[in-house]
Image 1 (spheres, rainbow over the protein chains, first blue to last red):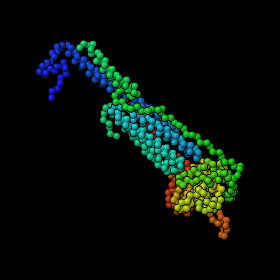
Image 2 (tube, chains in turn purple, brown; image 1 turned 135 degrees about the vertical axis):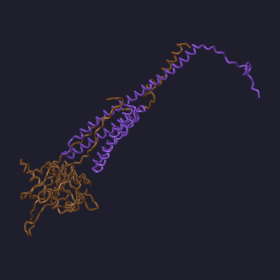
Image 3 (cartoon, rainbow over the protein chains, first blue to last red; image 1 turned 90 degrees about the horizontal axis):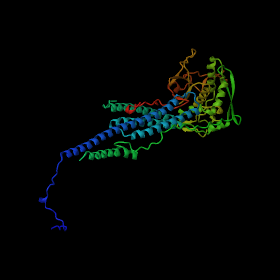
Length: 203
Length: 319
């Protein structure tokens, strides 16, 4: 079936088509090619510079978050060590109970601090090389959080005079604390490897 | 194409980079640069909240209704003494209405009960008056020990062990009988008690004099351990028995009995001397002779072995 042609419009037949002749100016062609290369180079260099700047920014953010975490953890340690130095040999029952209430308050404080910094450090976008260090530090905070949580459980067991449960909780807290120390050692190894660009040495 | 045509291309590229990597993240609150993640809600860092202080309980007045008991006992010099003990009735009643801890690991709290302390301090000073002579320390100690050993023994499931003549409502019924660890003033008002009552009372009295003691828990008995650096008197015909707890030596003391004999054949009068410190052979209780007791400290404070923060090196060469 023939297709009706629009009135006044004539479609040329294919053999009638001819390529337009281009007058190539060599100078203009070089300029255009140069501009394209320059644009690509700007994008590449700019991208690399931005990437490098971005990685430095990420490491700086990670550093500041770890530094803030460490500063707060040492505030918790100040409270804890002062508490542990308190002589308990001659305490009355009321003083023992007050001592344990302070222990519970420190456990709550430590738990809050570790949960807070864990959230921040875990959300950091870090360069791939630092991912191991970040993961180890988050693991360290998780273990510390568990240790503080077990301290709180021990304090609760003390309140209901279940001293065996309190002892069990303290034993488990000590284990969690040792796991924290191991995770910090892992973090240190991972960090060294990231900064030196080497493989992570075995633990 | 002229050089003037190239400049907008370069500027456009830069603008795209700046908008993509800086402006957009800045507007959305994301980290500047590639691979930005969602934001973390960050509040203020947590702060230490000290525990709420508990108000000090009002001491029981001793000028109102009181329970009084006279103890007739023999001191280690052979002299017969009469010692009157006065306990606020309200304190005694409050103890009787207090539920007991079924787990003996917390029975040290009874010995150290703050409300009982004034009664115990007063009694300990009357039985073992302070002396300037250090040589008298041993005699003071043994007088206290002997005083408690002479309090009549009565089992928890005997109604005669209680001044009311009936078992207290918080007596704990167990498969091998009744258990009711008494506060020191309860033993004093009742005037009788069993092995844990005597041990708790003796621990409270000795603690009031500054001695460090523990409860010694056997399978069927309870006694006291007193911390001494070295106790090996030349006259002892036995090897003093001690148990080690946290590097300290706690010597065995029996609380419920003493060496006694009738003054003469057919006489109801008896004479006696205390079971000495460290003598486990004289009690006649097999578990005391054969077992190593569980040590129950009077003051229990759960103490973590690990609490040190490990300093972590900072990334990026930070200090």
